Length: 331
Image 1 (cartoon, helix red, strand yellow):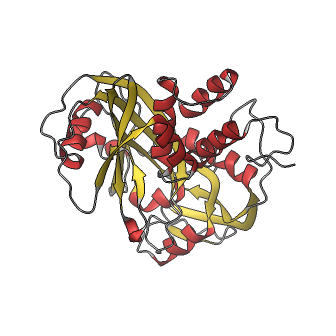
Image 2 (cartoon, rainbow, N blue to C red):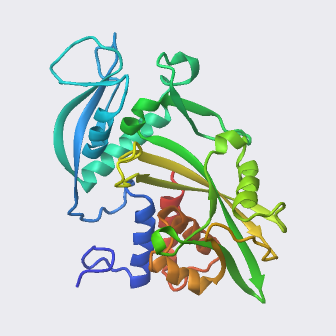
Image 3 (cartoon, rainbow, N blue to C red):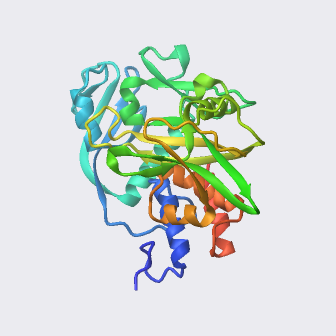
């Protein structure tokens, strides 16, 4: 009989398989050395590409990009011209589409992992050295509380992907010896779902802690956070934005790092707004919501990490936890 996680005779318990599915849902295309690959039948329609700049004989970057992202970029006003791979017109900022292909999930995973690693150590697009001007700035590698960043041309974000930082808050209480945590229940399209307190744009805040204060003020409408604030490390997530609305974000690959804080919050003084409801959940209720996929993918990872650190995962083999920690906190 096939297991919940899709691996025949995997030997996992049902609960263990469900946790693996949640973690893989938040890290959609990263595989790690020594990790067993799951058989996946889905293939991705995409283009292989190379970026050629004037004066460079070898491609600056090579990779794969979703075909849907290419179609949107072709319609956009951009300085980066798509051209035939055999044409040499000497133009500036050339994205060469080499061939259309269909990649398996494993091949796509490997290509996206290479692209993420190349993007993380790239310096060509940094600051004033880049001659194309219009850039998006993405925070990377926080040091000593600061959030230095690097820029990539806005027009190329659909090809290169983006690196983002978020901050997440776990507001929790000890209710007569039982740990419970606050979650936000929102109502998109009439279907209620759950998420953690979170926010983007850490680079504008200057540090994860200042971003945390802004998130709590904006989402919880709290002027001050009561109780102890404990940094809990970071969670890594990977995804691609597959919103089918045809926006310029469609098809972008996103490599993210979420800074997590645990806050022992003693009061329920939330102000309700915009259809948002605040719910205090026990560990068993949180696990049930996770397995029902009521949390968004990144909030799911943050919740799994919270349950893991507080020994609230339920009945799971102890030897599985180190592998989950590695998957959640890769650099």
